[in-house]
Image (cartoon, rainbow, N blue to C red; front, side, top):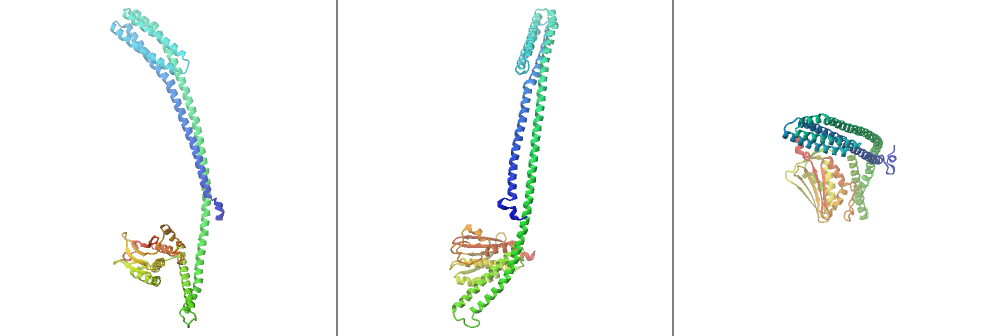
Length: 477
């Protein structure tokens, strides 16, 4: 599958999958909202039915039972009054009957308020109760008059029948309340079942929708992974082809360049006699300088290619930094003298040796020192020093007081083939690979490259090798 086909017009599987996921998430939110709303409705309905059961059938039943209990207590007190010979006990019983009568009236008021059926039934029961209350008052009066037998007869006769009639009336009210409670309960169960079925359907729908979305997204991700694998293979093939091409070009270019540089040296040095005009000698030197520049550029590109493909092998050895800095500085001193720039080397006493690849370290220092000289002003100074940092790192620092750069240009300076677009720096030739190559070579040693610069005040580059790169520790270990 061609990569261009998969990602054509900015419409890749991943972007489509993201939109699908967003759409599915929105659908899930809607379903969750409906589900939550349905759950709230269920709770509200059940709460409403529970309230109705409590306020109506349950309240009525409790009130009737409380009234029944009070009536039974009144009937018992009435019997005690009828059989009592003590006027004080009669008065106490009559007061108790009066108090219970008020309680029963209160229960009748509640029943009348909450009853959902024919309220005439309540009125008849209340009338029967009031008639019985009058009988209770009459029994108490007969007992006070000493007519004990008449009081007993009234209690056992008309009073007992009135109590039985009230019991029948109250039982009817309870039966109606129970029926109403059963009706509410049935309705509550039906409503709960209906809402439960709706919620189950919504949950099933959510599972189906989410499963479908997951299937499509996973399938699209697999397509994307396959396309990325193909693209990776193509990129690796292209990289191998690039490396092979660079290797071939380096061999093909070096041969004629070496010949050009050799012949130009012969002309410049007048090996076979004078050339007639001194301008030819100058042209010969320019030819040689251009050839050296091309060779160094080819070498940098080849080194980067080896590093990027993991084929750059470092051969570590013990390096005395004073010697390395001295020999490298001597290589760039002619360039520095010609530009009118002073050079300094400082290596602190007792600075340990470095365990690293000699060629790589020299290449790093050559690039850094050449850049420092190249971008310094006449009369400036380029300094190189080595020291052990507070964290135990072994550091090499190259500093100049030249043109420097703006802080926002520092990151770009560390990228390959980049040069800072300033009037002063652009007058110098360069491939823009120096700092990038230094960074890569330092990284191969586990070291870091820290670049600090300020426009007009110069640049400082510090290569910090980890503590394990100290030669003495390495040899002991």
